[in-house]
View 1 (spheres, rainbow, N blue to C red):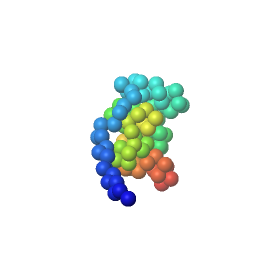
View 2: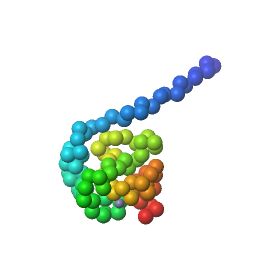
View 3: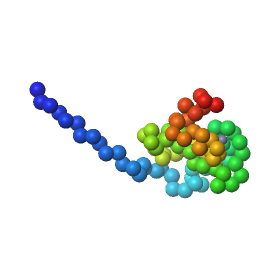
View 4: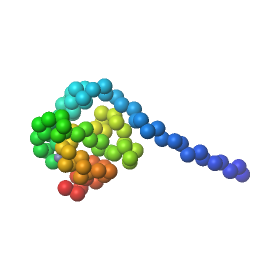
Length: 94
Ligand SMILES: [Zn+2]
């Protein structure tokens, strides 16, 4: 019997991104029927880019990615309330 020691893989901090600017992200949202100016969680209307956060449905700290498929528009309040919950956990709490 040989004892295998599994080296812990260091997770890279900078996650890969498959979009180059917010415009591309907005086009992606529109293509999957997400209104870029409505909060994904509470459906409130956001007026400015300052009010709109780009939200990670699965937070980076929970092994989420920064790929388009993991991003949704969110108001500041939802983004802060959600914190490190996944989108699913957050929706359950609403
Ligand atoms: Zn919201």
